[in-house]
Length: 144
Ligand code: DQA
Image (cartoon, rainbow, N blue to C red; front, side):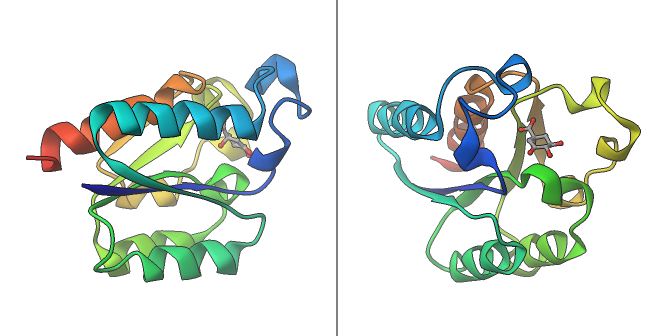
């Protein structure tokens, strides 16, 4: 099984960025946690991070026919991007939405998730573990 893990803007700043909200782990730490977990579970993962909306759209489009599922934290684009929502719908791959922080307990502008409308499941406020739960969900539902 091949899973694409996409992270949006400022996720590369983990560890430096608002550690009280996002924790002290870096993006490199997040990548190694995901890579080790995927290896343990016997799934292939590709990790992609971009600060650019169009690059995320390109990556989702390129996943068509190459990946079996997408784990995505669109970060701030969650709350603004119809383009990412449309790209997820276009490829129609099973997708899972992740947020490191509990967006439901934060500002009003974080209460809408466009990408989430194309995702089967959301794991929110679980820190880095949310990505692993997302991988588990895809394996359990589509890994057979
Ligand atoms: C985030 C939550 C978003 O509201 C925010 O813009 C982010 C990170 C999270 O993982 O908690 O950049 O997606």
